[in-house]
Length: 473
Image 1: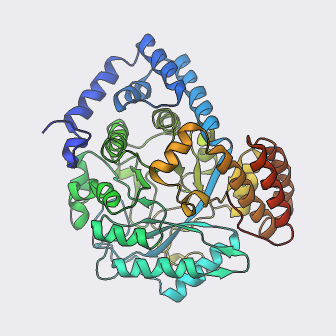
Image 2 (image 1 turned 45 degrees about the horizontal axis):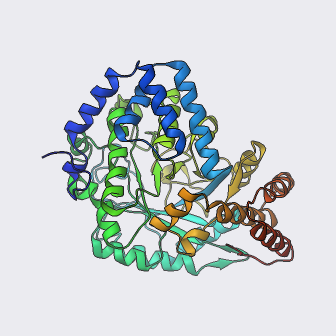
Image 3 (image 1 turned 60 degrees about the vertical axis):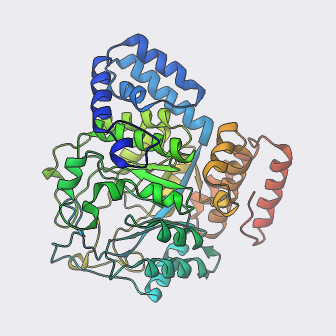
């Protein structure tokens, strides 16, 4: 076997020898000021870096150059995404699972966690609770169990979610985070109108991966790692990757993550739409202390910054696994999407569970309400966005990337973000949030580059005050 980013086989495009050679190269050049400075300078064109170049920046021990790296990450984030931060929430449908993942309390050996699968009526109640907060985007989550959570159940649930319109609420985008499946099932998910298909690799180190997944379908490293290829073959052109930092040596997984992105670009012409960066958290019978490769906050911030430099047009997600302080520290370094007011329990939105009934997949470290999160973002000058326009207008995959890379996306993203924020302010916000949001809208409206788009957006915003909704470019 040899490293080949165009190969459809996992052990060719995630090549262990190439990762180890990359890490050795990074170690040998971590103090090479000329190389590091040159990489930072070259990355200013927003065209990204290779996995080997990014590994050098991550390894860099030159503090003054690291500061320049952080400054560059902030500039790239500002150039491409502006101050927009997209908000979403996970929705857990079922925690039945046939796998034995040692880091997840849904593992099949856990005999005391409460097992639950939502009925369609229960899904309706969960979705109404989410709509009443103001959410427009969901990420569906289920355990892997072909009998309890078959693809037909997931598809029926998606239809249910899209059908619910409560007051001014509607879920306009459903992303799906379910186990690796077949091309045909991905095709069915695409036909159901999903947004992004999300699947975390957990770790790219094959021996560790197999040890962490000792039993069940997820034990098959190649089938899992090649899932994004099958999703794209099934017509899903927006896919989301991620690793669970803390399970394995973080630098190995960092390189593997970028190699996976390069593979998708090489084979399909478009890399991942999003990259998620979760860190291991406590959960039912899971103690993070059993994993020796925990990533501290300073290292985590560096990972975020270098990823933003390496894959500038890829959305980066940080969830409520992280604390308010941790999320605040990395927002301007590259993060473009965050969850808010999340529950990781099955049925956790409609009503709070008793401790003995808890079915959480992991402990949430940021438990603020959605309005508190929105107000927090506004107070720091960020623009909370619930936008789903690109997906509904067919601006996905390479079509989205071409708009992003030319800068034309600003004439869509900025006004659409403003209008979804206005919807939130009119229908859900507290008085303080509404006041701060209106100030931000007026300020950012003037920043829309195209005059015609700017004036149309101004008219739409005015019409929203009389009850009209769902304008988009």
